[in-house]
Length: 279
Image 1 (tube, helix red, strand yellow):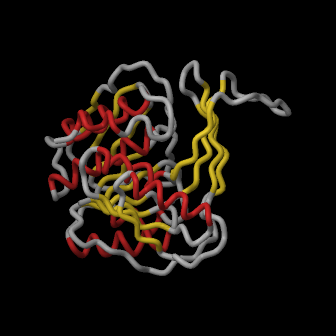
Image 2 (tube, rainbow, N blue to C red):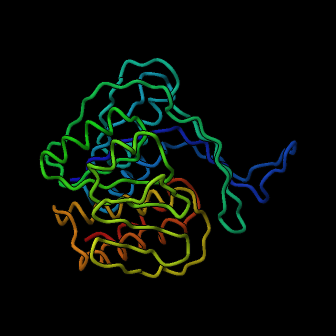
């Protein structure tokens, strides 16, 4: 079972032939509204791949929050809301996807400034994924996971101040190509994705790389999040911190999941095809 802790947004996704220039208006070809955010997209991927997953986040009681909660329920994601009575709107992301190549732009209002209680449910969890949003939740979850011997995976998309305190509890730092750290990462395992280029990995003893699967991209939105979800599910199935010999197989599995996502247009069109990767 995967426990995911982090951001949940309401994503408004529009497909366009061309991305607008400053001051320009364009007509969209389609509109979707779905729950999003790094930990949330990863949780949806875990469920799509046949895993059990519980997402701990902040949504609240606003009508838009109920929309996101309903979407997650339909996707098979268990939800723990740290502030269920919060009346402010949840974080919103406006996503535009260019049809010709799947490239996208994102304008987001994340959860900065939202104060959460230190509550977490790790019942039955065999891996924890944190994305660094909602720092109090992330720190409490990582400490508790470490105490229980549960592997901790960090979705390191960008540097956040909480990472200074969080990284000592992390077993696998799974970083985007754009991620930079003020100091060298000292987590037991460091993995770096790099778009269509090979995924690299390193431990204290050795390094390696795994080629990305070559496919035609139709929609890259959330592909990295799907990758993190698949990787964390593979770690959860091990129920231990991977060894160097495990990593190529786990990364290849995550690469396959990300490749499926980018071949399908839309916020949820990729979910059913994930059944092909179920263990």
